[in-house]
Image 1 (spheres, rainbow, N blue to C red):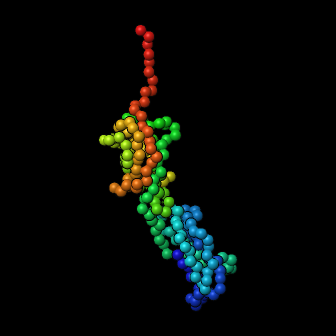
Image 2: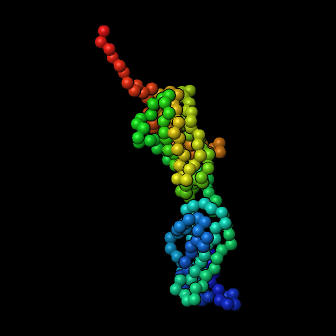
Image 3: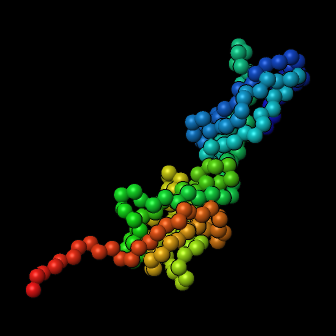
Length: 199
């Protein structure tokens, strides 16, 4: 991304000055831009290398301001949409308060989803947890959900139909991310209580 500092005749301003880049509209949220340093202009040209947006949003605008200049000298960009990159990574995490996984009983699983810029997937993105490795013929139910405001898919009714060791993957739009969970051990049905009676 480049910003040109010009004079009243439209000519590049000679010398050096620092240009500050920030969001003008707040569509993308506070501090949405990520880059190394505010560049120093050379003959009026400032280059911002590898600018990354930390959130998605529509009709966002950026502003560039010449630091320390009075009165304020700056410019505002045309509106643009911050679009998510492809979903490439998922972090699978089992519930800490539900204990181990048991086959045939509803379980809870969180899956955080990220794009290629490590941004959270947009709210409403649909995903399906699938078995990457596990017992032959095993299947899941309750394994589909949508990304919430925290960038995660929370599955509250995930059921394994067979005990064994599983590795899970996430599928979005029919494409597997190949971002695999740690092995998950699934036991047979939990026995909640046993009652014994002497003869």
